Length: 389
Image (cartoon, rainbow, N blue to C red):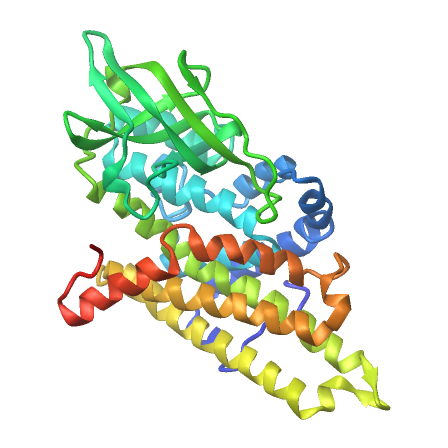
């Protein structure tokens, strides 16, 4: 049973099934017991707590919506959303690890891979015995992935890759990279295994955000891979964009977790911090900030539950995912900043999680589609006019 109360002003728990509640509580307990006691040190040191991976795998956090025959748990998408919500309540870096493993590595192999690729890779990825990463973004092409320069050339033995990817979560520690490159001018997906000649994945240092996450470059210098490492069903830019839509769905839920952590911290602090002979929670301006936080969190929760139901019923549109990602991360960042204000100078200390969440959310707001790009995706959908160019 989860040890803490949930931020649930509208009794959203009544919209959840017993299985969904069990999944959420299990991950909440994992975060309370295993993540929160150690995350500040790893954030400070700039290291990923790799020892958590085995237990995360044992609890079914990798590829949980995939069929059991491939190592998944046949969970619905609301349950998956609750998993990543609770992981990000711990830290965005922990949620990012699970998101990449599930949405950006296992999903493309399941969706675009051969049966042989699925049988070989998915159970190992689900068990955490193998780690994966996703290579789409390039140094000069982020919001415009169609302009990528990474190319694949077919040879008698397979393919040769040349190019580079950047801002790749898990890259340095990965056993397999799902890499997107142009083959005869068309974007296709390839599986590049660790220690392949011509492939390197140096870690990027000096981050002020997502410090408990591994971020890397991927470099391909006449990197030769066998024919069977092409994802045979990958077919143009729509294939990696489908993967990004899976990841954005999880990020929308993750934003709720970061917002809840910041709100809970600020609320508890405001009740105990005495100024002018009474708790600062008794002052009108503090109450206004807390009311705004809980209102936005409630809206985020309702949006995501409905988003998950649409996804489970096969009625989800990618523009709806863009709205949830755009809204939830914007307001999660806003909430973390307001929480820091309530704590005053104490808000910058690592005794409290707020500055860590705030710094992480600066990255989360940008990756998997910037706030501006999601604005334009929704704008095109409601007006019929594309404003990207």
